[in-house]
Image (tube, rainbow, N blue to C red; front, side):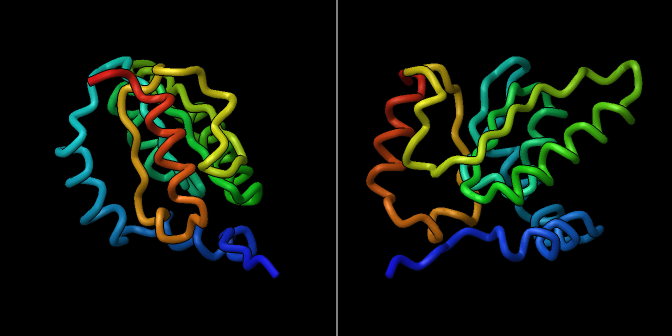
Length: 146
């Protein structure tokens, strides 16, 4: 029997955890990942295992067009809800966030064209993915050269 590694069953708990102040994701991972990937305005960033969209929203604030993918429909539903709430609450001087979400396995990105992604982020989720070879192949397919 195949074991599910989806976080769908704990989606609300995970969402509540990430939306608190002072989380590991906000205080440690986010500032360092932003320094590392140096997002340029208009770049397309793919967030695999995006969960409820925390990092997607942050990348969007820095000018990226973001594609978030997670196998958990429950987490993607929460991500879409956050995206819509964020768009409604933004000020006029803030660029409209461009985020699209897909509930899909990370080893099947058939909705993304070849060589169209500038940067790919997989934060704290690769260990939960069964077919890592398939994920790497898909990343290579969708990532722009260089």
